[in-house]
Structure formats: structure tokens, C-alpha cells
Length: 158
Image (cartoon, rainbow, N blue to C red; front, side):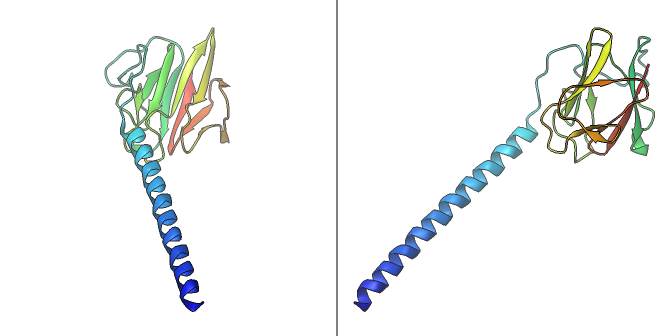
């Protein structure tokens, strides 16, 4: 009887070991998937790919602009808000924020609908904020609104 009990407990331990290994494998696979998605350079449509800041020698059309106000190292950089502007760490974004670890590869986009300007979070991990409030859907922007991507804050100018 004692031998049967030991065999059952050994079998139960073996099952638990394999279940643990399977869960560990699934966890590692999910981590690798997230890392690969974050490292992939996005391919974006539109004329905003690789746009340089307007303050970098490029003259912007009169109209709406996004001016970086935080962090201090980037303060004053200005980007024209024409049809669409993407923001993120990825090299294909219109506003590339490589040093902000809280910004996703493609974090958010600013776009026009008629004469209105909107911001939309693109599934970022840390969210996009307008005037300190996290947005859940495309949100209309007006002059003076502050938009936060990670630790980077921009102000809408018109």
C-alpha cells in the first residue's frame, strides 16, 4: 500500500513539473512576442514618415503645429500638423521620441478631419493624455491643449 502511495505522489509530481514547464514556455513565448513587436520598425503610409521638426531648418505651413514643452532637452521642437502625424519611438514616425522609455514604437497619431484636429492612442502600453486626462478614443484638440506621450509633452499651437 505504501508503494502505491509513493508511485501516485511521484506521478503527481511529474505532472506538476510538466505543467509548470509548459506555463513557463508559454510565458517566455509571450515575452518574446512583445519584444519583437516593440523592436519592429513600423511601415506607415502618408507623407509624415521621417518628418523633421520645423525648427530644424524646415519652414512649416501656417496652421496647427505641435511644440514639445517637456522634456527640457527637446523643448521648442515644432512639428507641422498637416494631414497626419504619428508619434513614437519607431524610425518611421513623424515625431520620433527614441529616449522616452514610456513611449511605444508607434504610440499615437494626430490627424485632421475637415478643419478639426484629433489625437488617437494607437494601443500604447502607457496611454496618451490630453490636458492630464487619459484618452480612450480619438479626441478633438484645440489651441493650447497639452498632449502627453510617455514623459514627453507637446502643446498644440495654431
